[in-house]
Length: 197
Image (cartoon, rainbow, N blue to C red; front, side, top):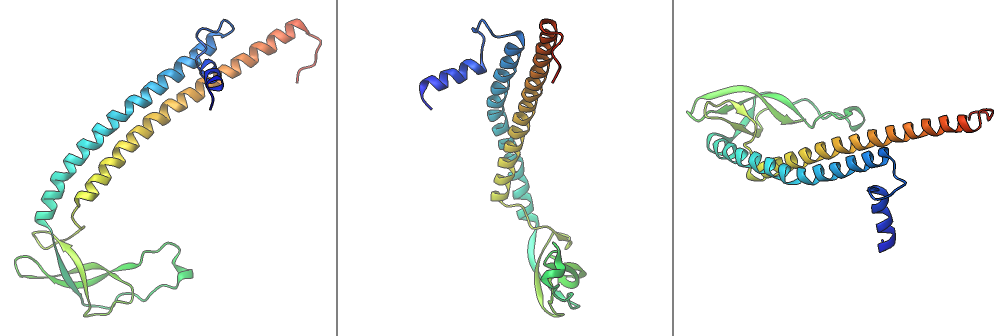
């Protein structure tokens, strides 16, 4: 974009020195300027929030990596048969099946675990257990903690930017509506016999 069109765009967006600009134009421009400032300010705030979330998750990573371990669970029953692709409609590729595994203290545990469809009794499937031998989710990784931090920062910035964009949209729409009403009133004063459209 050349300098002249850019300058024209800036003057239209921020008409403070324009003698023809109305109060509504200046209010709309002020809301736009504040919205841009808030959106830019939300970048370091979002980054700080994401960084703090990452630091908190790093402690969780350390705790879960130390307290959880992966073991093989042996199925004690057959898993359900594979569902035909046309019948799935978003169904997961695994189902809960009864299985047996050893807890950290050496005792045998029996319970439901997730296994792939068509898995047969006697086959092994990897699971994660805690110090008590209970089935748990896989421990959070450093990469997962980083992704959580980035997502939190981005969502915070997006929510803030979306809110100020909505405020500007409402302000601009209201300004146009008021201006149209004023023009209609003035037109009726100038030409009262002209039919309204």
